[in-house]
Image (tube, rainbow, N blue to C red; front, side):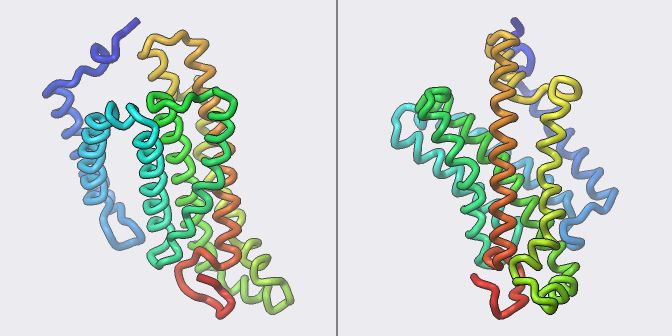
Length: 263
């Protein structure tokens, strides 16, 4: 069995390679004039993301042993992960105060799945197991919520005339918005579906590789990866469905388009 530190040793060479890869990503983004919302360049965002990831992973690596030592700190760390995900997803979708509604789609998918896993004993209430599983589920829900919310609100802004026409014909506000935003938001599920369809053929995801590097049998690693993918699909479907409902009801929005939209 190949040891993890042999596969990817932590030394100056690793740091240099990571720096070169990050600079290359920034250079390609700048050369291709990739921008966010047509204004801000992605090169700076890539640099910031790389630096943040380095600092955050270093901090987590340092505190993880202390966090998993007691139940209160363990649960507090999971709540912190959730709070950061809500802020990230919400601010990615909208810049106004309705971003707080992102807490609902994130919790609606993740919380039931975590409770089932804990109650059935498939995941013990221990940091070494709970933190990575919760992180995977929260991360998947974050991605689905952000993608669905952005795509739905972009579509709503572009095709608002169709929404008004549907309402003029007597369709309720919620139903008129839902007919427009549903196809766009559903596209947020495509990355997860593609990953699940091609697992083992195109990619070997992190959970599978991590289990193998940790000494687990290929059968056990495959079972764990399958569990992760199925759970993620449920979490993401629920997140997209709840985000759609919030947008259709005007709870999560960018610009107040009608007097009936709520905060």
